[in-house]
Image 1 (tube, rainbow, N blue to C red):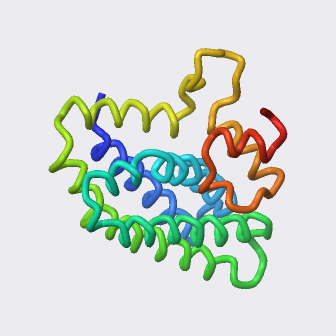
Image 2: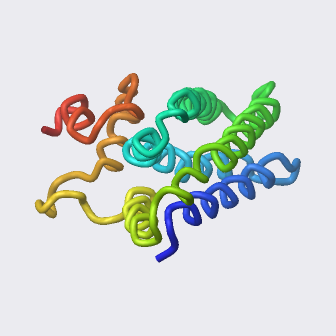
Length: 184
């Protein structure tokens, strides 16, 4: 399995490709932006749950950059949710896509230049691979992360919280999400 840095960069490229297609006039923008949301929300949640804390632990000097990354996640998520509530024919729809694409690209550049090198330089190959496995499971529909195979995954709880419009859900732990959606 590829290491965490490779997996995050690969997902960044996939989202950028979707955004580029959504920016084109002939694209099915609404469907493409739904796919962007499907990829970005668990990606951001996993970064906030264990990637960013690991970076903070490895490089305390990156604490402000980590905080900025979380703030950017939430700004992008809010813009994306507002867009998805609308219709592709709405005034400003294409401008909102462009704004989201710009924010995502800025965030990716900072993350890849400032944060991911911390993992590449300060974790050994086995640690990066283990974190990569965990990230892949969290972002690509992995197994529940408890011994109870009937327990909801964090991703499932996050989706319930999203449906219920629970504020601050991307910053919540699995337990906090379960309590917020009444699934504890």
